[in-house]
Length: 256
Image 1 (cartoon, rainbow, N blue to C red):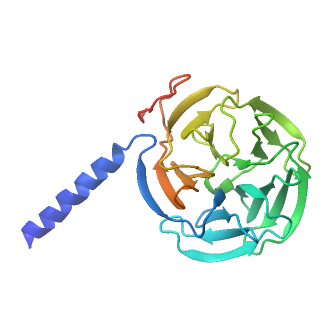
Image 2: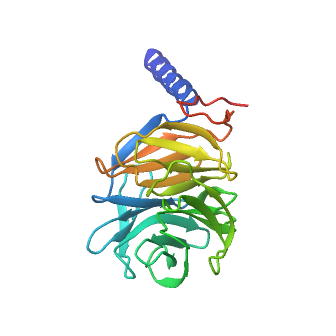
Image 3: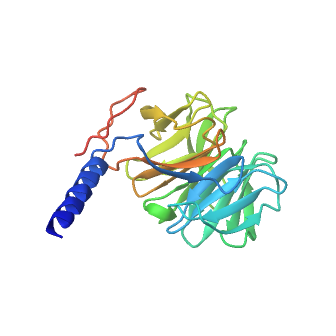
């Protein structure tokens, strides 16, 4: 019995050691998306919200650990939705590139509370917040590929508070990493870039599969939904990265 306990203890210790040494970009888990054609993602406290393109396009609530489905609703305002954000209070913000608007919805029922113009195709949407699960969201971020800008919007009327140019044009979703203060954006070429709000690229890593449309951040992880194989990946994203300016290769996660 003692030998068995010792073996389990050693295995657990080795697992923790491996976990602690995980670098930025390391895949630590994955599961199948709730449907084909992932187009955007957002993370609440206990649920991952996923936009699946179709007729109709639907927003699913799934387990962020294994993808178990808890419910869904159709985006009644349009099929052409991509970016997704979650803010505290139970709100999901859906980007629509048919009319260039962002819709504020009930995260459980899909009821629409209002919308505003993003000033361009709202391919990427993320909460500008200071905590996981959209805690203290003070603005909504959107990203467009033409012109290629990331914009910070007033939550009530969509007025642009600030913006920066994106050097890697993309029609994919974005995520806001409040710990490192980075906007994560995947490019069609297959890399995921971390942008400062000044527009400089501070980190990057290779996407785990093709067409990484969906992006969400929570608890020092990025969830990346790939349309190439309909899988969602949980990727290590340390909150204490020692970032080097203009880094385009694989960045190792260094701890302060």
